[in-house]
Amino acid sequence: MRRYELMLLLRPDLEDDKLQAAVEKVTRAIVNAGGSLSKVSPWGKRRLAYDIQRHREASYFLIHFDIEPSAVREIERGMLISEEILRHLVTVLEDRGPAEELAPAAAARDVEDASASESSGSPTESTAAAARDVEDASASESNDSPSEPATSGAEHEPASAERPAVEASEDAPAETSADEADTQPADEVRAEA
Image (cartoon, rainbow, N blue to C red; front, top):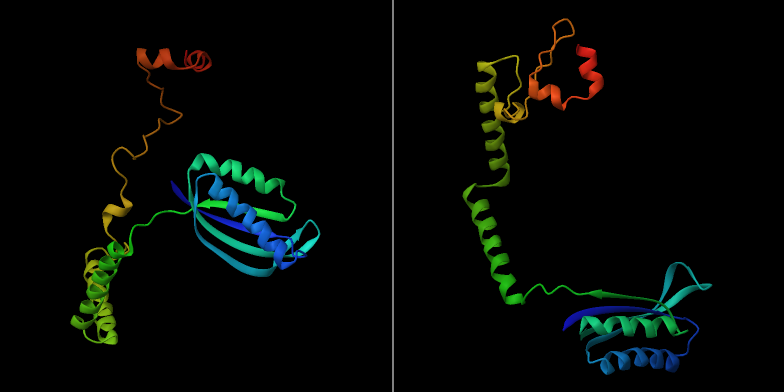
C-alpha cells in the first residue's frame, strides 16, 4: 500500500451538509476500495487563481490515505463524474523515514557548526583572517607570473582528449591514408584528386 494525498476543490455554493456528504462519498469510495484514511482536513473557502465553471472560490479539503496503486484510478473516475467536485489532485506522498533517523544527522550537523564557530573566535576575526589568507595566496602567485590571473592551472588547461586537433592550412596538401579515403564522402575524394 502507498500513502496518497488528495486535494478536493468543491463548489462554494454547497451547504455544509452537502459538502460533508460529498467528502464522505469520496472517503467511502477510498475505504470500499480497500484503503484506510489517515487524515481529513477541511481548509475552508479560498479564492481561486482563475475561474472554474464560473466560480471564483472553492471549498478545499485535504485527505491523506493509504491504498493500493491500482485502486486510485477507479476513485479518480468517481470524482470526475461528481458535479460537486470542481477539481481534484491525487499525489503520492514520499516516505522520508522515521523522524528518529533524521534527528541525529541534524543534531550532528549543529554540533559541528557550533564547534567550528567556537574554535575560530568571533565571526569578524575569522573573516579578517580568511581575507589575509586570500591576500597572501594571491600575492605569492602574482610574483610567479604577473601577467596571469591567480588561479590554478588545472582548471583552464584542457585534458589531452579535449584538446582541439591542429587543422591543416589551405596551402598545405591534405594527407589522407587509405583508411580515411574510404570513409570520406565521394565529393571530397574527387576534390582532392
